[in-house]
Image 1 (cartoon, one colour):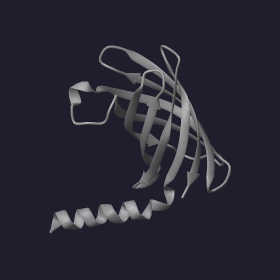
Image 2: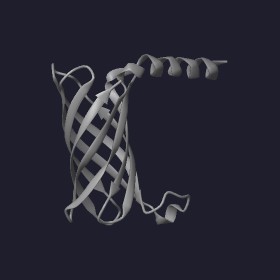
Image 3: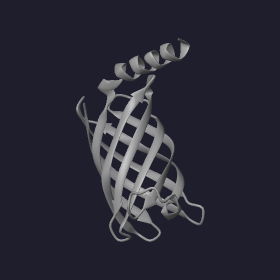
Image 4: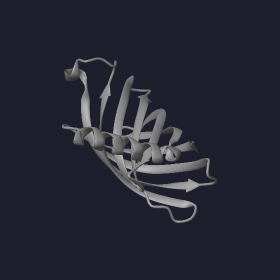
Length: 148
């Protein structure tokens, strides 16, 4: 009974924050070496509006690799500006499959700024540090977002 109540409560919290859903297109560069990537990003608020979950899928052109990541974002709003910090993890792979030995997993942290032009439209710039087991990478990106 308690498990069902907790599950229902969590579903109601997520539904209450459904209006905070944002979807966008992102692009940028990963170094070293300077490599172009593009992809999509989606996020939504959880429990309180300044804590958000973010999911990204990207294609890294020069390496013929793909990347999937998830992060928790702390994003307060100050008028039209919303600075944020994030912590997350992800993986890079050539082809999505269940052969996890072919994946390169990483942890990441980052910061950025989202400029809210209206209740439905914003721009974002961010800087992320990706830590793989054998190297570190820096990612600089920008994106255009629509808020649903």
